[in-house]
Length: 172
Image 1 (spheres, rainbow, N blue to C red):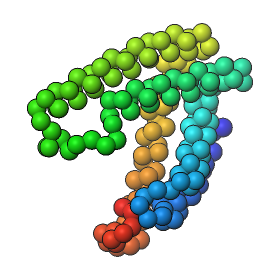
Image 2 (cartoon, rainbow, N blue to C red; image 1 turned 180 degrees about the vertical axis):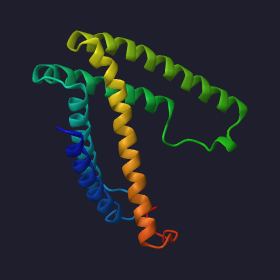
Image 3 (tube, helix red, strand yellow; image 1 turned 60 degrees about the vertical axis):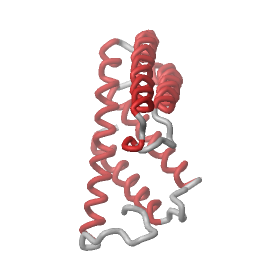
Image 4 (cartoon, rainbow, N blue to C red; image 1 turned 45 degrees about the horizontal axis):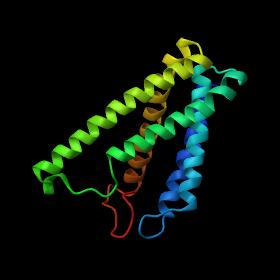
């Protein structure tokens, strides 16, 4: 796929995602809509990485299960260090802040060890050059997603005359 194809696909994705924001039920839970959006982004991410790394069918077949395993483990480590329900930093005691810092440093060490393990596993599947390009491709995909989200948000602000969001609605 070409970059123009990805641009078109990402544009369509973000237009459909923006409509999901307006359909969001009270309380911020999107349920099946959120899952559908995640699946679309995951599919675009996979296509973007396949294109950037120029993966052959054989490479892709072997690479993706290992990559998804790596991402799941990485996510689990991050969840450990960054619990959802946390006290505001300003309300923490000094001891709680120190504990949080230690926990985060431990998670960073775990992630480094995980990356070392998976780089060697990726090297069993892909040439070193493609493994190096993987990090850049991931970063470029994130930048593109964020840029398009910002563009969409700016467009919405422009359309509504830069009004603040009405109470009871999302940020958009």
